[in-house]
Amino acid sequence: MPAPAFMKLKVDHKTVLCRDLNTYRSLRDFLLNSGYIGVYETERVGEEKTAMATFACRSGLTGECLAVVMGLSAPNEVSHAQAPFVYGFAGQPQKDAHTYMQHLALRTTDLAKLKAHLESKGGEFLTPIYKDKDSFGPLLQAFTRELFDDEWFFIEFVQRDYDPDAVSAGGTRFVQNTVKSLYVSKQEEFREWEKTGKKRKFLDGVPEKDRSKLLQDIFANTEPKGYVQTVAPVARNVRLA
Image 1 (cartoon, rainbow, N blue to C red):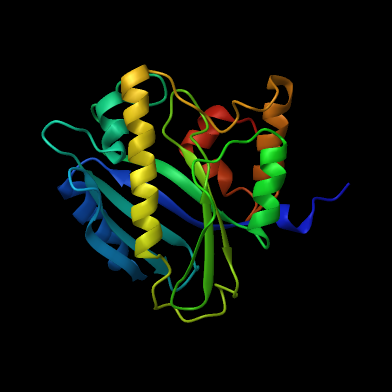
Image 2: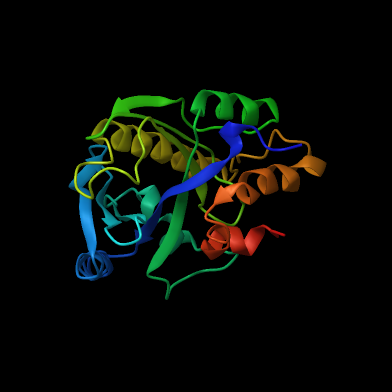
């Protein structure tokens, strides 16, 4: 049976975390000198104590979008965006790692139907559907809980009620209110993990025998084909046909 239209997904963007300011600035400068055009930037967004700096860009040649993030920790509190570097990932400390692929954003034609479908299977989301507008039109976003025990990776599902490939390269494609709301939700989730040592994951409510199939249904229906396999946390944990 063919997948429903809302499950035919396209990569919208991916977000990479940076360990420190030098890495953040170097990656930002490299992208801007490689044909990418800035579509969003803020030096600080988040809470009063912890926050993050964020730069997002889009390739005028390929259309690929990438967000670059650096967590800003407080003296007595770690920003969740620094978690991979403080606590490690892939089951081990990562003292030499300078970047980490935090999440992949997948675009759908109907976010409400997609979210309801995944929740009916037991999938757990961290956020509701955020509704706002970017420079080009309505923007809807929802974020899952993290997927794996030994990773900090999650999925964003997004609906843009315009053709992102048909609009100009400039303009803002990220919304400040949503970025802040996501940060606060992620930081609250991270505090709970630090307190309890237990992580609530996207697949926790899915019967164990169905978990691999649900991820296959998501990733196998994502265009361009093969892109998902380039995202390291997915490649480490999911066997894709």
